[in-house]
Structures are given as structure tokens and as C-alpha cells.
Image 1 (cartoon, rainbow, N blue to C red):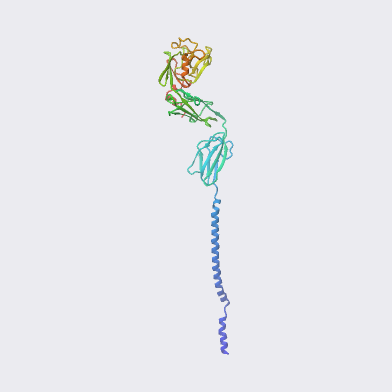
Image 2: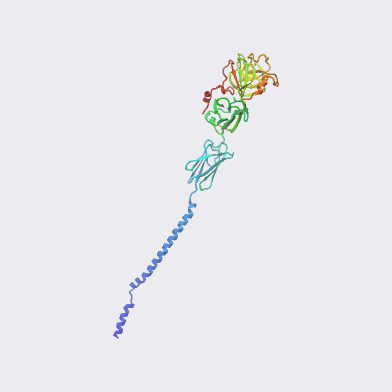
Length: 418
């Protein structure tokens, strides 16, 4: 029995466990498993969230970027914009790829970008009274469109020019422009008017008054010269609040050279064509009380027949001839070279009997082709040069007709505003 009792006591401790110890032992593995499991589960979850957020940021980035902001001056929709300042386009948050400005008249405005390509400025001002459309495209963005309309000028001026477009003139013909309004900013207007020649020669402008601007080379034009007058007066402010309206090119041509020299001491006119003597005619000039201007004169008007009244040149009622034949104007003040049928043929080449004009024998009706009056008229054209010597009168004023050749080249250049 004792053996059995001893045996029972020795087995009992092997089957009995401390509650604390049991819990401790039991808790080790689950805790490790939980920690291990939680650790793996947390890491995977955080990685997945980070990747999703990165993908979301990558996908959303282009949509989140701000569009470049384009501004136009004059502002979009402006109805009476100034035409005295250039058009300007600017961009913030980007650069400009292209800018195009088009007027409803078909014109376009060229311009330049700054170095950063954040600003574009037109090379010239917009025209007045014109609707413009601006299309500006930033790099990588859609085009921005704006429209504006410039106001019309209040008062305007134009320039009437001589000779006529596409005409052919003699070598002495200047390009003469008469403006319809007095010009106060001569430099601005002269910069807008250019005269060029083929073959090339220097051509300079000279202001005779605030309404007249003439152009000529140093010496007579070469025969067969092509002359181009470029008028860029549109929106040029010639005087305070007064703007030009013309924008055009006009061409003229120079024909053969004909220079006629009248010597009123010998009462003879020698006509030279391209350097050679072409004809010689007896003439009659102004008498001692009505001397003929001396100097270089240019034929500015031609009439097969015209009326001449002394009252129009300040000579009262001394004469009124309704049908003067073959009359060619030399001065604004009334000097002509013309045919004369009322004086005896013995006058020509022997006496100076006129009121200041140069007369050649002619017949009434201007139909006789054999007389000097007809022959000289028939051989002449606008712009031909007539030089008068030994008349007993001073040199004609250079602005009395198209007679600027009486100024030296130095004097002529002094009359330029540039």
C-alpha cells in the first residue's frame, strides 16, 4: 500500500500546472503569431496605400497644372481703342508660342517677342477705324482669342501729288506734294513719304511751306528713270489731332531729256534733246515794264488753247485773249511759253514786247503745224526744262511753280525736316 501511495504522490506534480505559468506558456505562441501576423499585414497595407497615393498624384498632376493666362492690350471687346500705341500680348504661367493679329481690312500686324517669350509687341500701331482679331497661343496650351476695334480719327489730311500716277515727264519734274491741312510735325510727315529712283540716286525732300513738300535729286533725273512715291501717311499725326489717311505707292517715269534755253538778249530759244541741238526758234519776251523771270523753270501745265486775262495776274484790263494757242505754264504767277498770233512776225527774234511771257510765232486756232508755236508745243512734255537768261529780271522764286532747281543742293537739303 505504501508503494501505491508513494506512486500516486509522485505522479501528481507532473500533472499539475501553475495558472500563471499556463497562461504565460500559452500566451507566448499566440502573441508571437499575432505580432508576426500584424506586422506583415500592416506593412502590406501601408505599401499599398502609398502606391495608390503616388499613382493618384501622377495621374492627377497634368489636370491640376494651371493654364497660362494671356492678356491683350487693347483689352478684348474694346470698341474705341487708341490707334496711337502698339498692340501688346503678355502671358503669365507660361511662354508664347505664336501671336497673330489680323485686321478686317486684310492687313496684319507683325511683331516681336521679348527674350523670355512672355511678351509680344506689334512693330507698328494698328490702323484707325479697324477691327482686329488677336490669336495668341501659349506653349502647350490652347489658343486665346480677343477682338478690339480702333477709333476713327477726327480730322484728316491728304497729299495731292504731281506728276500723275503712271505718267511720263521730262527730266526736270520734281515730285511735289500739296497737303490739305497745314503740317506742324514736318519730320513725322516726311518720314512717312519716300521717293526712290531706278537707277538709284539720292532724293531729298524740301519744305516750301507747311502745306508743300517737294522731292528732287541733286541734278536732273536721268532719262528713262522710274520713280516711286510711297505714301505711308495713314494715321500719321501731321498736326495736333489731324491724321493722314493715305497708304499707297505711285510710280512715274522720266522720258527723254529736253532742255530749252531762252536768251532774251538775242531773243532766241535753243532746244536741245538728249544733249544735241534739236531746234532753234525766234522768240519775244517781256518788255522793260514787264520783264520775264530769269532762271530755271519747269513746264507744269499744257494747253492746246487757253484764255489769258490780265486781271488774273494783277495787270488790270490790259488784255483778254480767249484762245491763246499752245500755252505751257512755267510759273504759278502766270508766266507761260506760248504761241502768239496777234503780234507781227517781225517781232519774234527782234523785240521783247510781251507782259512777261515767252512768245513764239503761231496762228489762230492752233492748227498750223508749220509754225514755231506748234512745233515747240508738239516737241514738249510736262517736266521739260526751260532756262531763261538775260531777261533783266531776277531769278524766279523756287516755289513759284515747280522751280526748285534754282536752289543749290546745299540750300535744298536745308529745307528737309530730317
